[in-house]
Image (cartoon, rainbow over all chains, first blue to last red):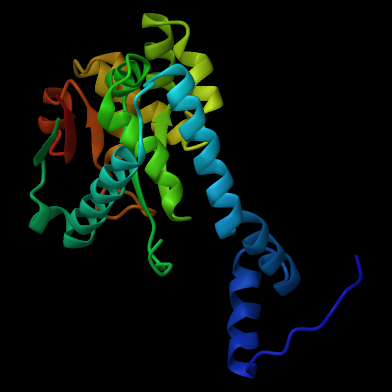
Length: 98
Length: 133
């Protein structure tokens, strides 16, 4: 693959340089690692389709879009509790889900 | 999908949650499939929990290996040491790695909630749980 150039603000470049040095890599390496490690929307959709098909075929034949929506709500509640922190969320707290 | 967040969230799934998944538990199925809705949601299965679940039901290994949403958490030195201390203090070996992984750490300052059907082991450690019923 051919190299290309990305222009960023000099402050961003300087911060990237610090972050890269602290991670023991270069700006190029830092950006390559990030780009490789974060899935695109299309890749996420493919993974979701894979796991949904596996669940239906092997674990829960009646899994449907309503279950997917309920799963999204459950993750949203987990995120909310995590952002509240352990004290607000209640250390040792119990969340029951049917 | 909502706009991307700069945060990331995760849960620990213990041996009992993996066993529940293998028997078609609705909540576990929902968590697995919906985890792909955002790039920053993770289901971590501690290695010792996977071993315990597979010992209970060998086919679970195929499920854990096949589902892309489940990431097996290796037992490194830090967690091995912590799990060993917990077991010496009387903790169930099947829960020990999950307890160690769920406690507050540099990466997860608030700790992580544990998805489980056996909550007592985690409540006694002051951990947040999501109880499967």
